[in-house]
Amino acid sequence: MSEDQMKPREAGLEKAYGSLDSMLVAGEKIQSTAVQRRLFALLHRRSIVAATTGRLIGLDRGLIGGFTPVDIRWQDIKSAHIKAGIFGSTLRVTALTMPDLAIGGAVRPFEFSGLRKDEAQSIYRICQAQEQAWREKRRLRELEELRAKSGGFQGSLGGDGSSASATEDPVERLKKAKSMLEAGLISDSEFETIKARVVSQF
Image (cartoon, rainbow, N blue to C red; front, side):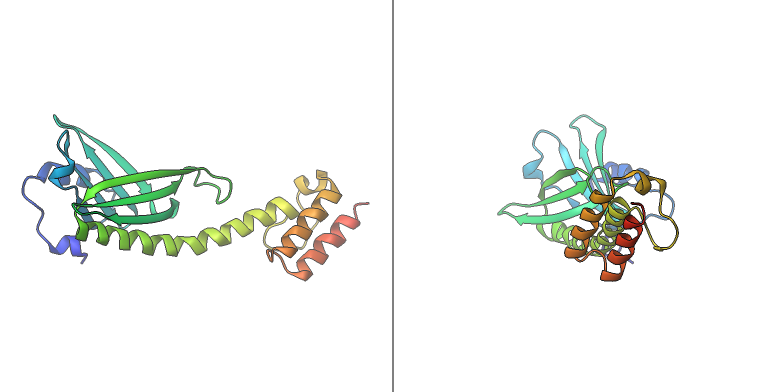
């Protein structure tokens, strides 16, 4: 059971939690929540941030009614930082806006200010754990994408290669493969395989 599930929900925030619950998908559970302090919510109702089993959710609530959600999947989070002030903490998160590719995507910043310090720390710890867990997965995915882009291969090096690699300039392929070898992205044997395949096309 998460620490958020073990504590009672604060009175006066029933609608906020109701809005949050309405966004959860089947099987998704809230791990921790952080509420904005009243001092930072003079012109609107207090915002709320939640870390769930699948994503980070932020709710900005209007003074009269309604809410604007921010929804960030854990696999899209690039970095997370926290700044503790005198009256509250600010959580800053950057996330990929083009998650279908591990490389070449833009990064968008998000900021949640005026959060209660202990609650913000709890959210931050979860963000850090998720960032570290997905960082290695993203690195491996980037390597696969670079290999496919540079050498026209992915996975097994056998076969004749893709049609895309066949139409690419052989000299450029060799240069890319050499760069990948020097960067440690491919092994010597993989480089020699690519080199032999390219040379055979002359």
